[in-house]
Length: 476
Ligand code: MN
Ligand code: MN
Image (cartoon, rainbow, N blue to C red; front, side, top):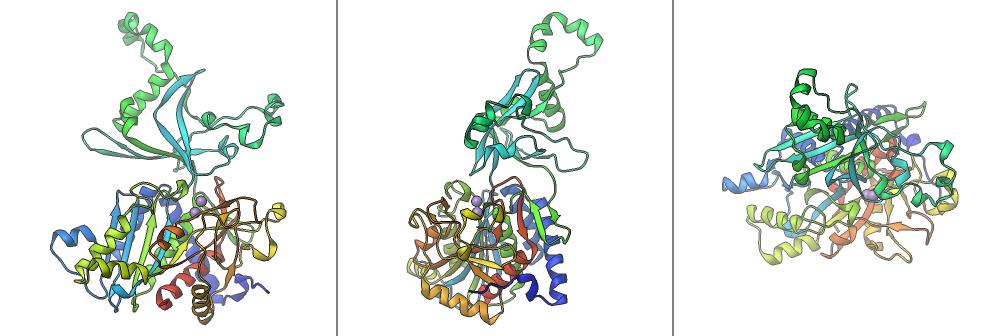
């Protein structure tokens, strides 16, 4: 089958829109490097668009009606948005679902130590990473520290030009003969991913020194660098060492999203899996002003580690929120809720692997997504004989083809890679448990899960167009 290059399908006006959309997307990436930051950014955006918080409406004993916009947040890490359509919810919604967590290194609960004159934060990686990619690059620290009294301290260090950054060391090439014999999965081990955060001992001025000499001499000499870091944390953030126990700190690549290529056709940035689908879903949701069926955008956490936990897709958060929304519409019953979920259509929006000519043998050229090839549909994901996959129905795919062709959306169908080479999963199978039609769809990404991932500006824009067409047209 002949595949179109998306760039060639655009008018002059659309080419301009592609660039504007990419610019906005890159800002979104810069503002949301953690799931909490993403939720904050999204809430700020949608409240300006008239979205109201569900719990607020419940508290005020309010109601919902056709055309209303409402959202619910789960523990600051997942969000569900609804724009109420003309038809009763029982007839089903059109749902765009994506995830806002990305692979990274999480700081452990007892992380701070000193060794060889360096202060370190010990980490535990989150999601699938090639560990050797995370050494010797500038890293930033984002997250929250919650004090015992409930105060939350937000932290983001390493993004501004005059911020310090952090890094993980690697062995110099001169001494790496043995290291380079190792398997790539062992070259850098999980426990070696410790972040260097300081090298200067705590300095006491001369007068104090005299006074404290006896008391402090031994202690200060022992862990003076760690002590220095603790003094800075105390001064700048009011943090004590024990506060790491109730912190969620994420180590992510430092720096802003960049345009890539002389032609500026691509975007190179951290966390595009899956914030690229989250952003395009959000924008589609805001663009579609009315629809027959209720439109829903669901952005969840923990996809990268199996969709577990209260904020992951497997939690009851979404189902409970739909029940609350139906209740406020005066449409709730247990049966109506079940029907609503069963009758819904969903695009489980996640990234797909892009064909990489440097590793051509890992892909089936006929069934792979190409950067610039438009929005991607993965009928199934999984691994080894489709294991663990949601395999979308042919009838559903036919319906989507009809909608997309009508709106001239450039799309491609793909598998993650060659049969039996590996695989992956998304949130699709979890929503499919309700009996609704779900298919994996989204944007192709080059070097997925690397600190810096690449996408095509054209694909990002085209995928948003696809989501708009879906929200307006799906009704299976
Ligand atoms: Mn993903
Ligand atoms: Mn992923």
